[in-house]
Image (cartoon, rainbow, N blue to C red; front, side):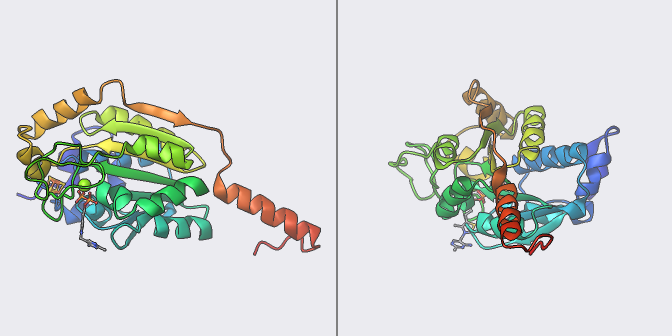
Length: 274
Ligand SMILES: Cc1ncc(C[n+]2csc(CCOP(=O)(O)OP(=O)(O)O)c2C)c(N)n1
Ligand code: SF4
Ligand SMILES: [Mg+2]
């Protein structure tokens, strides 16, 4: 039997289902993968904040989490690996009225995509960046990424990983992000609150979700089944979740529009918007 989104949602609070394309279910994700938890929390936040699906543009790169746009009724752009934030920046700059969300894996966002990440932070553009940090390249067979902890066993570090990992929240804060938060896939209510706050933020908002890839990282590092892994992740990040940094900002789009209006007024071109 193919489950519909309605079956999964349970009897209450179904407004968020309009963000999900249940005709495409079941998803590509393995049983126990944390990505579904993230997607559901995001759909609930969108429903609570109220933008219609057509006011939202979701951008993804390549990877397991990059499949998320297949399951959403929003606009979607499935880009190339590591470039989700580049595409998202272009969309937000051209259409600042849209809610623009980039959904990325740790490889997509911070390994091949690291350069786009730091510049999106510096630019402080009003994009919500969500990284599903499962500590490896899930889609291609569990290779190590820039967030794989030292000592981990992966398909490309069979003796234990020798490199240290990025702390993504510290990295993006240092690069200029004005909203930085961390949650885990074992805490959906926390995720929902973080997405609510991030969606209300006018500048670059970064939400890292520490999540479970039981198929590769979990199996290689003997972390047990998916529920055990999710509990373990929540425990490991106790005291390191929540909104970690926030500063007041107008965000790129407002600053750009204010400069443009002032310049046009000075040039006697009042009223022109382009
Ligand atoms: C330019 C380029 N390099 C490499 C690949 C192969 N590739 C596809 S997905 C992926 C890694 C995905 O890892 P991550 O972004 O962490 O997402 P996950 O699958 O773990 O959700 C790689 C290396 C590609 N598609 N394009
Ligand atoms: S390989 Fe890992 S990240 Fe990809 S769907 Fe399966 S559990 Fe999720
Ligand atoms: Mg990954």
